[in-house]
Image (cartoon, rainbow, N blue to C red; front, side, top):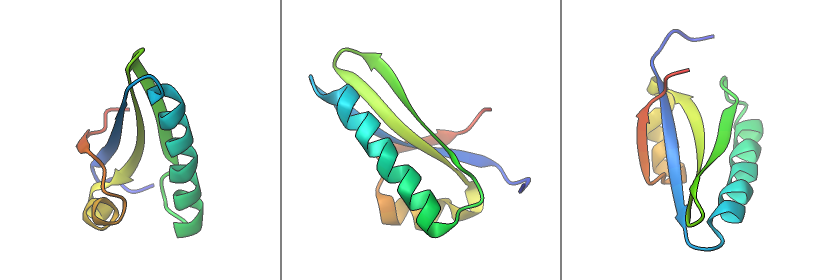
Length: 81
């Protein structure tokens, strides 16, 4: 495993369907990780409220720019495991 800083890429979903949309988006993130044979395999969903959920994936910082440009997350933060 790399010792680089890890970045959490985040996609926010809002509205009545936010929970289902975030869960579905996570499935696509898992598929991307498999297809690209990525080193890290960390994804998830967080349900913030009835009207806001998010999906995320964690990448090594040195991969962040290319993955960000490909997948277009809404935001990112340093990942704290």
